[in-house]
Length: 370
Length: 205
Ligand code: SF4
Ligand code: SF4
Image (tube, rainbow over all chains, first blue to last red; front, side, top):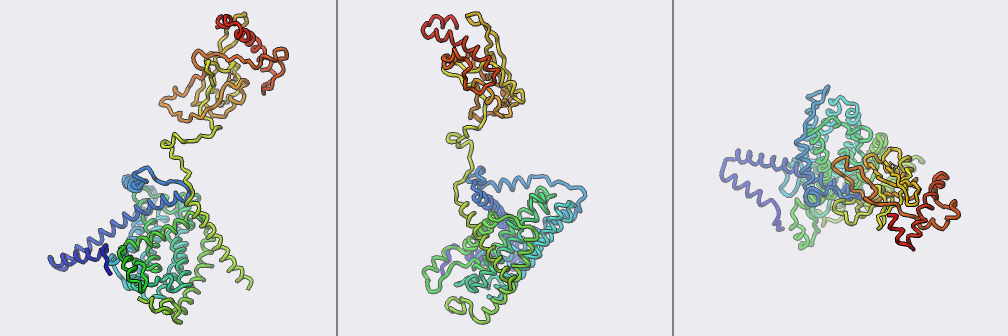
């Protein structure tokens, strides 16, 4: 397949030129630094884009225009906001546990940053390809909750504390569902590595491959992912009307910015994991046999496919966010423990049966297998 | 068994209502945006007729207003926003008459309660839709509503019931009714003449 816009050629050219001109150690060092810079830049740029997109879409859901004064259609609005937040004073709060207070935002940022490295953004755009990628991502993204709890605890403020405790309860509950939903797909694909998962979805996305079971897992993953990011109807850790701002009430300036950034990036991370695991990741839409069509699809670069699919899921999450009222804490835990978790357990069982009995789409129609 | 049915019923009803909610917001996404982009849309901006912006005293082309300087608006204003200064003049037939000298209204103190407009027996004042009222100093908020050289509009309609001065359909108190016809009869008589006899008119002026 011709892939003219793919970054593969550029990256391998860079690698060979570097290897030709200097020892391997330096080549690796330079490449590591480049990857780190690229990831950090992507992190910041994505956050800016997400904030802008969210404000616009939110406004449209409320029949408003959203930001439209700074730059054409307001596209410079979030850049202006970033500058503002960088210039703001970090207020020193009395009677806080200073060390934990300052450490908390970094936990959030580091957790989402670590996850970022394991996400396949496109063909070859994959910083670390673990053979246990799913496990790694689930484990590392859960670290963020430590940041939330520390922030709530160290702030020495009842609102922060209640917010953090709620967040903890919520996170621990929903992490379970999210994990089980991913596990369903691990059963289906038989691998935990993201790259192998994507390769297996070339002709048939996992969400279709496991039909009933996959779709249920997908919906459950979206719900619990949404709950993990503390957004939408699940935003009771920072319910403004009850807790002022929840666990980050006492934060200001850049520290608040960190929480804010991490929140948006978590939304992106959840959407991108869902894309990779359920919707074929960066793999373009391919139909076995139709080579001409497949070639046309490959002209669209893989990273565009990835961001396109992720964008759709992010839109979905915003749609949900602006449709439903906030849950009460008991309703929230009811939903998880009485509905999502039992359904999830049954779902895994169904998936196991589907796989063992050879009832997945790739088993039924071998032409769909990669 | 029953509880299992309830469980699944609740689940599916819940899913159905959530999907319904999402369909509502989906439609809302495509509705027309209601935001008014103010400085750009000044030309097409629609302000509701009843919106109270600025108190005015309408003058007609002859620079005449309807204010009799009775001071009722001033008495009814809860904030003391209005100040009616009247002057005494002597009509040509030797009668003393109170006329309006200056009518000041302080926008900075007004609560736009509309009481003055409601209570004015002569309908001499009204609120307009001119809402761009920002000024740089507070003194500019105090406005004189009667124009320079303006005078009271003489009422022609009330000429007929001269013989029966009590008949009036205005919402005025009995006290005002006592005063008003008195004033009107005196003024309207010369004005009636003035139509036939322009000389009289000039002397009055
Ligand atoms: S609107 Fe109310 S406050 Fe304003 S001048 Fe009239 S009576 Fe006074
Ligand atoms: S505006 Fe009306 S109420 Fe006020 S002094 Fe004039 S006639 Fe009387």
